[in-house]
Length: 155
Image (tube, rainbow, N blue to C red):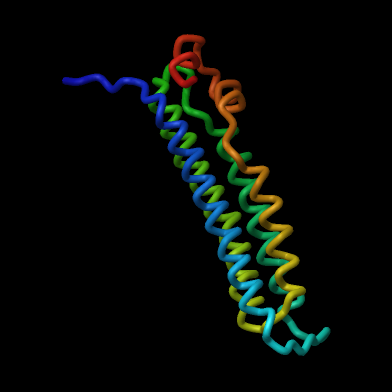
């Protein structure tokens, strides 16, 4: 029977996933923005998408917040190993990233379909909220109450 060792690169992998998703969203937003530059737009105040798009972004932000609260309220037991705590953090972090990103991507797709720069504004708001989801080592150490030896291995 082999024992698992604490992988210091595991936290770094979560950070890499976060930045990959962030950069992917930002680049897709820039591409769509530049593709929309030559398109004639007809803005309509009666469109139901004026409510649907901000609602999708808001649901993504709110959903990511509540998943984060659920994650904090259901931490693994103190007797758990550092690997188990990191796995819990990774699982819930990826879920938070996906929920927040879904609202942003919905706003991008609909902005592109309708050629509306106004809908891109909601994407920018969602991307700004996505920045707040960045995984931070110190916060992980505090939230999961890692011992000093485990925390030093994480550095």
